[in-house]
Length: 363
Ligand SMILES: Cc1ncc(COP(=O)(O)O)c(C=O)c1O
Image (cartoon, rainbow, N blue to C red; front, side, top):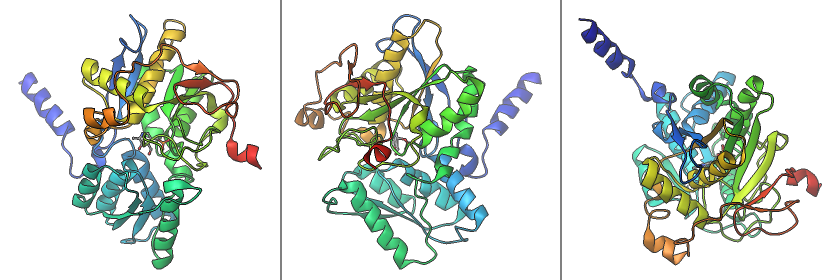
C-alpha cells in the first residue's frame, strides 16, 4: 500500500494542467574530464530541460510584469528581435497568456527553429540586409521599431534593456542554491546579459565573495572588442551594448572561438550525453579551466542555456564544420591573457581581468 501511495504521489507531482508550470526545476549535472580533472569539475544547470530553453523563465516573467503594469493589454501583440531562444520562450508565453507573437530575426536563424516557431503559432519576420554599421542586430532593431509604429497596442519586451529579463532568473538562482548550496564561482555566457546579472545578484547575497566569469564569443562588442563582420556563434555575443550586462559584477571575461566551442560541445555529447550549442560549448570550456585552476573544493556552477538538437546542422554537422575550419583543433589547455580589452583583437580563447563598460569608455 505504502509503495502504491508513493507511486501515485510522484505521478501527481509531474502532472501539469498547462505548460506554464513545466518551466523550472531543471537538473544539475556534474562535469569533470576532459574539462576538469579528477575530482575537480563543475556543475552544469541543464536549462534545455525547460519546454523551450533557458529563456522560458525571463519571457514568462517579462510578460507577466508587463501585463500586471498594464503595458501589455489582454490580447495585444508581442514584437521582439531574437536569434531563437527568447523567440521559442515568447511563443510559450504568448500561448499561455493569449498574445499573438511576431519575432524579427535574420537569415542566420536555424531552419528547425523557424519551423518550430511557426508550428507554435509565431509570425517570423526575417530581415534580409545587415545594417551598414550595427550589423544584423541593428537591422533587426530597426525592423522592430517599424512594426511597433504600425501597431499602437504592440508591446516590445526589449530583452537587451528590460530589467525584468534579469529578474526573471531569480527562480533559477534559488534552484541552484537549493541543489548545490552556496556557490563560489559562476560561469555564464553573455548575450543580453540577463542571466548572468539575474543569477549572480541572488547568489551574491548568500556568498558575497562569489566570482562571476563572463563568456563571450570572439568578434562580439560586449566587453570592448571591435565588432567582427560576421560571427558564427549565436546566442552569446552581440554587436551592440546591451544595458542588462552588469559590468561591475564580472571578475573577468573570456572570449572563445567557434572551433573551441565545437570541440567542447562534441566532447560533452560524447562523455556526458548532455550537450548544447555554441554557448554551452563555450561555458563548458571556461568552467573546466576554472575547475582546474581554483583550489580543490571550490564550488563552480555554470548554465547550459539549451540542448543540442537545434545545432544538428552547424556544431554537429561535419560538412559545415569542415567548411568553416572548425574541426580537429583541440583548444589550448590555458587561454591567452590580455591586460586590456582594447589591447588587441582576439581570435581564439583569451581571458582578461579588466572588465569595463565600453559604452561608458566611448563617452
Ligand atoms: C543559446 C543562448 N545562450 C546564451 C545566451 C546568452 O544569455 P543572456 O541573453 O541571458 O546573456 C542566449 C541569449 O540569447 C542564448 O540564446
